[in-house]
Image 1 (cartoon, one colour):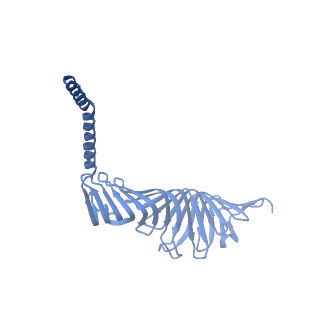
Image 2: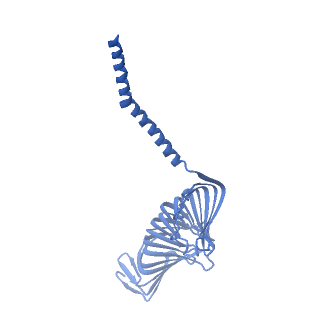
Image 3: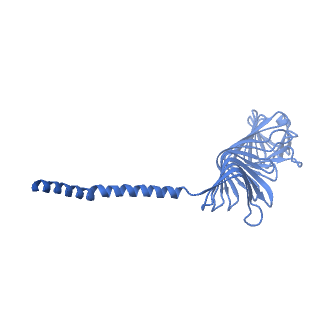
Amino acid sequence: MKSYKKIIFSLLLIFIIVEVLFIFPKQLEKSDEIDTTKSSTSEKEKPEHRMEGVHLVESPQGSRDWELFATKARGVQGEGDWFLNQVRVQFYNKNKIEFIVTANEGEIDGKTRNIKFKGSVVTKSNNGYTFYTEELFYQAGQRKILSPGKLKMLGPSDDQGDGLLLDGYNMLAEVDTSEMRIFKDVKATKKLKNQNELKIKSEMAQFNGQNKEAHFENNVVLNIQEMKIEGPDCYFIYSPNMNVLEFIRFKGGVVVQDKKRKAVSQLLEVNLFANTFRFQGDPKIYQDDDEIKGEEILFIDGGKKIKIQKVNASGKF
């Protein structure tokens, strides 16, 4: 009987030792894991502010920088960031609206006051240039609006109809100067009143919110009527009342070609009203084996007639 009790006592002692050494520590570990999870969850679930019909004004130096409207806004307490729905921001220059941006979503960085726009982003200048992108960024410190991706642009309409229709990449707009630039793969078309259409390609393009003039830079190629014009710099000049595109000017060395001939000069001015092409700066015409020089060469009626001042010809005659 005593030996039986000793056996039972030994088994109980072994059970207690196993409980203390193996089972109890594991239970403590599980308990700690549960507590840690609860703690991390509580850290993530910070209080949020939610608002509807939002209207914010940013005036860091007394004058308005931007004014914002949104249908809904959500902000995390203590962080200062805001997440917006159906957002519209008006950017000001000297208390006048310079650009208006609308988008499906927006984010305001609480520290930098930078703004990110996402989804069906539309940017409009005060004189009617409209840019369509999927993403846009506003840099508050430099007051610049940037879109790094693909874009479409519609220029302001005029008496000839719709404005310039343009595709490109990488847009930059400066709020303080009203300048808008496109830095890559510029391709544009413009319909003219006489049913003609001009097509232009370049590496860069520049526009301004104060006028309708345009500047195309680097490897510019313009096709108009049956002529192909190539040069480094091209300018679209509007009439004084700003209602119609009147002149196209090339600078820095120009090459013009059609089916019959080739012409070169330092300067070229195309008068869209008169349908003339005026070559200046050592102008020359090459046709077959002939070369014609002059102080100024003028193509009349789209090149059907040619007028040359102080002609100097060489070749076969």
